Each structure stands twice: as structure tokens, then as C-alpha cells.
Length: 495
Image 1 (cartoon, rainbow, N blue to C red):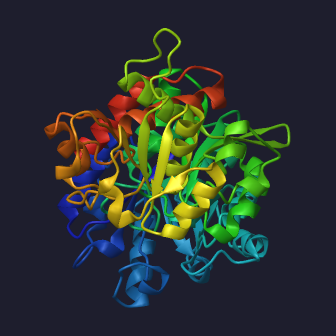
Image 2: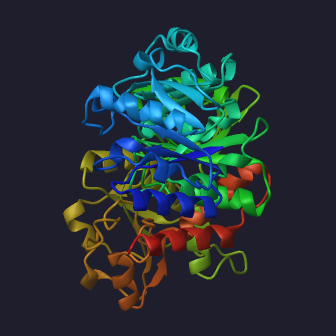
């Protein structure tokens, strides 16, 4: 079950949001009394309520907004119990002073906005001695391991426990809480009005992650990155799982560089079966792989890991996706002739995507020139792939048949930037921009205006995601569903 937090300044707003949420399927809401300005009218909030409620009145020291006296706050909590609220949130230090009354269930809580303490089990034992119906522990996640610790605590708890790791690192704990036995998790009314760090919207929890359908048999997948908030992979993979009616969920997982190795070692404890790998980890995961396919070995970058019977198997779907996109744009293989053979390509960017595309082109007989804003990075890759480099400032002097942007230049929000001057584009060029948000980057717009053949980042992104889906599930990915979802999200982000 998902408990949706409502924090509004006026009673009418609280009541309206409560009704709207229940109409959308919400089974329980948290009413944050500390957000209400002026005197709180509990009878108005609780009369004819459309669903069970959890009453919370959080002090500023606990991350709330209640600025009145502690005596006034305790009176509000006792009144909520007297009025028959289904649940009441009581912090550890006040739980003993507010006795059980009526049918109201006691949620005894502890919050730590700095860290996830080392003594979670000790904290659980303390809270369990305060006559709880439910124990709630919310802590800040500073590393992925905190999620593992919190979910383990929920799983072995002898009292029903809601365990939440806050912050963007803690998002997996919110989505997987029910799978490990939590009676409910928390969401917010709207993604722009989070009441706690890392809180997801009710809409995302229901329609993207299908929280209430996650069970003990649900297989877990995800994307690891740092930062993670920009990734659209959870949207398209979860939509694909729905399309194929698969009991799987795909999570956004923020993994700082220093925690990469430990995360990969612990991933299976969260029942993770496969992950997509993106910036900055495509090279960093190589040392943790037990087996890597030929493409990963040749490129020196991995974007997909499958966990299989203790093995960590590494793949790179970027390369194949890019080659398929380029091949299609050039009319495909005809009469045994590879359309990429003998062409000249300028690849801008020597990071993970640039590596994959340059490697694939060279294997297909294309003459590749690499350029990067950091010359040493380009030179290292050129030495590995046995190709040439050109200075970034002179990139426009190359007479290329294929122009590839593997840099983030032009990516949202810097949509007015381009990595290549418009007046140097030629109609005979194939212009391939790996940036997918927005799909119509300035480079893509300029290329179309010059009558170039264009490949967008959405095309490559969907192709590589379909290949990952195949590795994860053994089934072909639903390309049209993925493409529709990503384009809808990009279009919605403009407004």
C-alpha cells in the first residue's frame, strides 16, 4: 500500500487533494498538520474522510514545519486520537507520554536527516518497546549499502516496519519496501511538492513502478549512474515490462564512484537480475565483471550487466544499436556490400558513447577521426582503437561522410548549443546525434535544414534499450512502445 503525504497550508486544499487522491485509487493518506497555517480544525479534516488517514505533526527539528509549542503539538496529536484517526505518528521521545486509545494505530517513528545509523537493529528494539502497531524508521542514505541494510531490517522485523532511506540514493528502498514486507511506503501528491528528500510522486509509484504489484517473485532491474535524475530508462523499461506482462521492475539507482564495487557485490541481495550502466560507470564496472563479451573488451566500456548464477556478465548494446542505425540510414547492406566500408567519420566525444560508435565503425571498415575537448582523452582512445585524432578547434576541417556527436553538447537544458557549426554541414553527410533529450537538438535541426540524413539519439536509445531488454528477458523489446513513451516524456518536459 502507498500512503500519500499531503502538506498544504489551508484546510480546503488538504480536503480537495485527499478527495482527488482517493479518486485516483489511493488507499491511505498522511495529513501533515504542521503544514497548515493557523489553528488546525481536526474535525473538519476527519469528517467524512474518503480513506484512512495517518496524522502527523512534525517538529522543525524532525524536518517538519510546526513552530508552536510542544504542548500545543501534543494536544493536537491526542485530539487526533480522540477523533478516531486510523493512524497517528508518534516520535520516539513522545510515544510513551501518549497512551493508546480507541482503535487508532500507533506508528512510532524515528528520523535521521544526516545518515543511516550503524545501529539500525538497536533503534528497532528501542522503538518496539514503545507499544507500536507499526515502526517507522526514516534515515538519509549516503551510500547504496544503506538501502540493503534498511530492507534487510524490514524483512526480519518482528513488528511491521516501514523503513525508508531518504535522498536520491535511497529511492530503491521506497520502491522495494513492500517486496521486503513493509505494510506501506510513502509518496507525495505531486513530484514538485516532495515532503521528504527523495520522495516520489503517487503517479510515478503507481504508473511507472507499479508499486502495489511488486511481490516476492518480482525480479529487479535498474540503471546505475551518478547523477541519476535525468535518466529516462526506468520509464521505457517499465513500460516494456507492462507491454510484455512481465513481473519485473526497473529502478533508478544512484551509485557514487566510490561505492561502485560494493554495490555490484551486493546487487543480488536486492534480487537485482540486470542493470544498465551509464555515466560515469561504463569503464569503472569492467574490473567487476566475471565475463565480458568481445565488444566490451574491444571498446573498454560496458553498458549492460546481467547477474546470472553468481556471474556478472558484461555487454555493450550501444555499439550494435549505433551500427544498426547508421546502416539503415545508408540503405542497408546490398549485394554483400557494407555501406559503412570506405566512409570517413568524424566522431566527436571520446567517452562511453563515442568509444562504442568509433569501435563499431572501425570494425566495419570506416576511417575514423576522433576529437574531444580533452585532447588526451581522444589520444588514449585513438591509440586503443588504432585510429587518428584531430584537434577540437579544427574538427570542421574534416571532409566527413558521417558526423557523430557523442558529447553532451546540446543536451537539455543547454538546448541552444551545438558541437558543430551549421555552415560546415554538407547535404551528403549523415549526421548522428546521440543526445536524446531533446530529440531535435540544435545540431539535428541544423542538419535537417542543410538536407543531411539524420539519426537522432532517440533512435539509438530505443535500439540499445531493446537489446538490453532482450538480454534481461530473452524477448524482443517493444520498440514502438519505448519510442512512444520517451517522446511523450520529452514533449511533456517542455511545458
